[in-house]
Length: 270
Image 1 (cartoon, rainbow, N blue to C red):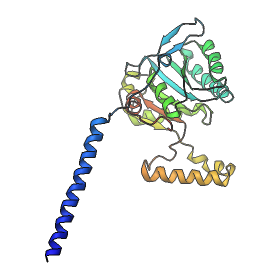
Image 2 (image 1 turned 135 degrees about the vertical axis):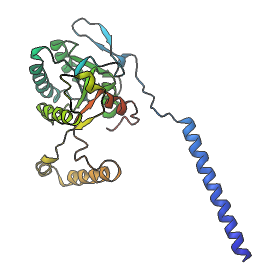
Image 3 (image 1 turned 180 degrees about the vertical axis):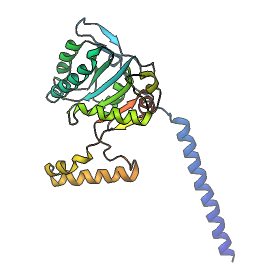
């Protein structure tokens, strides 16, 4: 009987001690942690260059009100080969829409510390279109896709912000499908009421899930196993109702972009 009482006492005090240590650690972490990440951005990374005048101009902030309809953010790391075909398609689509003068857009190419001719390729389009439509954000060091997308988003002017991969894996004309989904979700048209849609919260994610059978046929067995393994982990620990989380074609309202990228801690992977 006495042994049972001693064991119960040890168990009680031991548990109390462990809980106390756990609460102390939690309190320390809360005290020294920041809810929002510290976004490191050098002076150079706060400016873009106008190649036609040679002047440097400071990027605007996503916390300002929107002044155009659409911003297209393209992260690019050593993409000198694939960037031109993607930009040709992107510019052709947006310029066709902008013919009437009512639709305003910008393209922001974020060079993620590229060491090839990615920036030189982008500058050709910047000279052609002008900095009102095309801007280049040069990161001094490679941050990773997450960091590149975030800084591009934080420097954008659009009521809507589109993240698009530089490899052109998604046809740019599919933007119309994202816009239609957003219009149905928010019951509004950002082309007619950009300020109203900018203040709402919505994200539309592109999907290539319907093309998966064709893609698997072209992949090696090892890559196919890795793909399914990754999708399983995403399904288990994050989201379950988005079929293709890795599709490089996502459309954000301005408010949604602030909510997502203002609190993004991990830069390396996105």
